Length: 146
Image 1 (tube, one colour):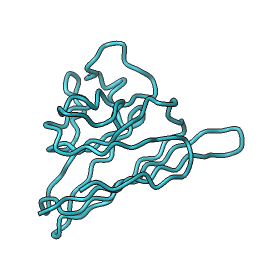
Image 2 (cartoon, helix red, strand yellow):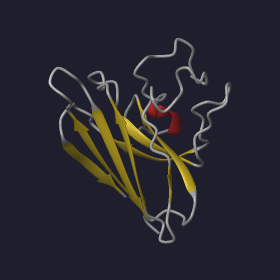
Image 3 (spheres, helix red, strand yellow):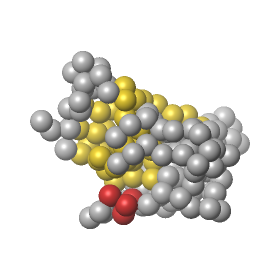
């Protein structure tokens, strides 16, 4: 069973404004299951932790960030999803801010949905899959991983 991940980034907003939309499409995963997914700060590497922490529009000075004031879907890109009976899903996250150049580098799929409680906020379990994405501030289909 091979899994596929596809990410599309669209940047642009009203005149003088900034906006980011990230859409995730997956297939080949376990059916009827909730997964967490987030944009991370570094590209994929040899170990699961190589992709760094979640990208945050306003950075939490304490890392890893588990404070819901920082680790929340408005300040981070959360793409949690539930797969259908065929193991497919789509998720989208929209924000009125743009990524800082070079600081958003991958999308990680985690083993379960993202927690929101203090001390656990932003946590979604083991990192199951990683896709390096060169988020660059323009409409760009960025890749597929198997």
